[in-house]
Length: 378
Ligand code: SF4
Image: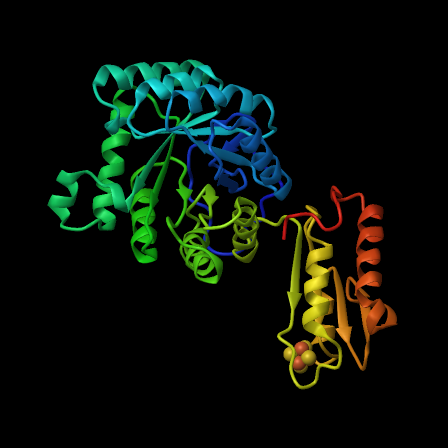
C-alpha cells in the first residue's frame, strides 16, 4: 500500500525494505520516509514530556522517542502515550526489565540492542512480549559504543565494524524468528555513517532509520545532518529520519522536512524558493522572503512559492512555482501558476501573496488544505 504523500521523484529508486508497523504508522516499503524526533525532557515528568511531544506533533513529527533510564520513567510511558497522538518509542539500554515494563505500558516501538541485555532468556522474554503486542525493535548502533571485541578487530569504529555490530544484534532476533526490525548506524562522521548504511542496505531488507549523531547545533549541525541523511536519501536508502540537533526538538522536525523536500523524497508544507538578491533588487527581498516563510509556516499542504527580486529570473521561477513574487521598483508582480495576478506596492506584497495562497488552496479540492498562520513548522 503506497501513500500518496511520497514524491520520490529525484535520486535513485527507493531500496526495497520490509514494512514495519509502529502503532498507527508504517516504516519501510513504499511508505513515506517518516520524520522522528526525541524529547529532551525528563521522561518521569509526564506533564513536561507531553507538552514537548504536543509541540513536536504540531511541527509535523510522526514518531517520538523518549529515554527510559529507570523504572519511574518506564511507568510514565503509559500516561504519556495516553495523552499524545503519535506513536511512542521507548529508548532503553541494557535493562531488559525496563523493556518489559515499557511494553506493558503500551509503547509502539522499542529501541534496544538485544546483545546488550544479558542472557538469552532475557532476550527471549523481551522478544516474546514484543511479538505478542506487534511491537517492532530498533537496533541502534552508534560509532561511539561499539563492542570492545569488534573495536579490537577493526582498530576503529569503521563502517564495517558498525555493520558487524548491527548484524550481531540482528542475528539474535532472527534466530528467534523475529523480523520486525529497524536498524540505525549513527556516527558523527558523515563518510562513516553513509558507508555503514550503504553496506547494511545491501545485506538485509530491514527498514533503516537515518541519523548523524551528535551533529551539534545551528548551521554546522544542520549541514552535517543534511549532507549525511540527504546523500543516503538520494541513493534511495532510508525509511525514517531523525535529525539530532542541540536545540529545541521542533527544529529537528523542521530540518528533517527540509532535507526530505530538498531530496524530493517528500513534500510537506510550503517550499519557499528565494533568490539571493543582487544589485538589481529594488525591494527588501530578504525581509519579504523571510516573512513569507514565517507566515506560511503553519501550512502542511505542499505548495511552492517563489520570491524573486527582479524581472530577470522572476518570470522563469514564477512559471514553475504555484505562487510567486517578482520584484520591481518598490513594488512587485504576484503570480499564480505562472500567470500575473496583480501588481502591488512593496508594503502590500506579503499580505497579498499570503491571501492569494490561502484563498486558492481553499478553492482547490485536489489537495487537503491545512493551515494555521505562523505555526511552528518552518
Ligand atoms: S532574481 Fe533578479 S534580483 Fe534576484 S538575484 Fe537574480 S537577478 Fe538579482
